[in-house]
Length: 116
Image (tube, rainbow, N blue to C red; front, side):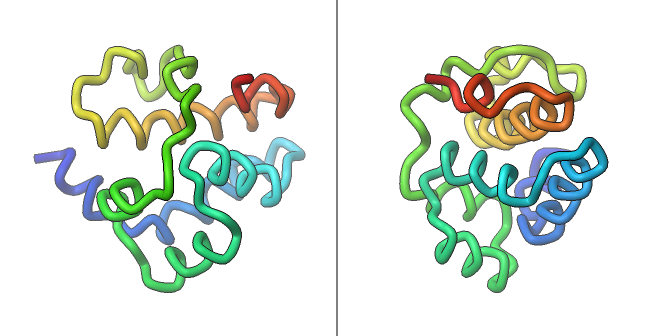
């Protein structure tokens, strides 16, 4: 039930929190957007449309142009869960994004966040 609630949340409602988290640690909105572009394949125009339409997380990820082929290289713990072990594919995608934003806020270099 908890997952359904998260899946139906508008991406636009969480996006400002990603930016705030990054900016509190001296990072930028542009870096947050770069992470989103890398992970999902959305370009700036498509991302803006998602935000304007208040697209929910389920639709955000199901309509993503493409998940990056190196997404499996994202490992570690976020919100008490090991991202590589999350069984629900949609929740795993959401947690991948959370993990990347967390790494940004912790000062990790963009070259390492965007797994080569």
